[in-house]
Each structure stands twice: as structure tokens, then as C-alpha cells.
Amino acid sequence: MEYLNLFIKSIFVDNMIFAYFLGMCSYLAVSKNVKTASGLGLAVIFVLFVTLPINYLLNRYVLLPGALSWLGDSFKDVDLSFLSFIIFIAVIAAITQLVEMVVEKFAPALYASLGIYLPLIAVNCAILGGSLFMQNKDFVNVGESAVYALGSGIGWFLAIVTLAAIREKMQYSNVPPALKGIGITFITVGLMAMAFMTFMGISL
Image (cartoon, rainbow, N blue to C red; front, side, top):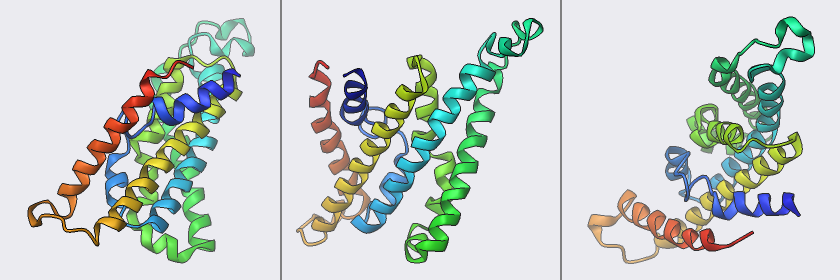
């Protein structure tokens, strides 16, 4: 039950886009059509789901103060927490490179449509934010970190696919010239964020 609560909360209540506004650059740039948005969203889910548990294990057994005590008493006072950012980003970059090679090999059309935004997953604020939130939430095991990663990825996926669907429909709408393009997109994202705020009142 705790896993289900964490999963639902990470999708709707602690949504990376609408609650923390993380990963907005690629979110706004790639949400012009549903197909491309879906591809990037799935890539974000995969990268989050793989990197966050790995970073959890590294944080718990390598980086935290005293985490290296399993190597012996001489390591019990070692504190490598200052390396957290570097280690987390290195893991994210490695997994992102793997995803980029797979997409280029098996979905070249999607790879071409995503362009520079696929490798930029390595510096996507939502991906790094997931690992940093993992540190703050102090999960008790790797299972919780995996559930949180999956939920956060799905939340980001839902946000970008929903916006892409709305933007496709708006192409046939009578939008005032001054608001066409990014202007009406900002307004739409703001309204979507307000709608997601209603989930914050849910007690899980």
C-alpha cells in the first residue's frame, strides 16, 4: 500500500513539471506533436527508472557519511557526499548515451525528430531532480526509489503528451495573433498546472 501511495503521489501530487517545473526546456520544445512527445516521454521514464535506483545504491553504500563502513572500520568516518552531483550526473549521462544509441538504431525517424533534446536528457532537470529528491525523501530501500522513479517518469510523460495533444488541437483554433506559438503554450501550461494543484489536497 505504501508503494501504491508513493506511486500515485509522484505522478499527480509531486509532478515534476507542474509541481516543481523541472525539465521545462525540453517539455516546451518537444511538445509540438504527440508522437515526438511520446518518444521523449518514454525515454525520460526509462532513464529515471534506471538511474534513480542506481544512484540510491551509490548514495547509500558509497556517498553518505559512514556509508563505506562495510569496507572496514577504517572507512567508517569517510564522507563522500560532496561527490553526489558528479556521480549522479555521470550515471545519468551514461544511461542517456545508451538510450540515444538504442533509439538511433531502432527508431531513426524518432531520433531525427527529437534532435538535440534526446542527448539533453543527461542535463534534464527532472532527471537530476529525481535523484536529489531521493536523497531528501530518505527512502528505506531501493524498491521505494524505483517506484518513485517510475511514478515521476510517468508524471512527466503524461504532462508532455497532454500538452502535445492540446497544441495539435490548437493549430486548428482561432488563436489571437499576439498569442500564437509560445505565448498560448505558456498560458496552457499555467492552466494545466493549476488543474494539477487540485491533486495536492488528496490525502494518501
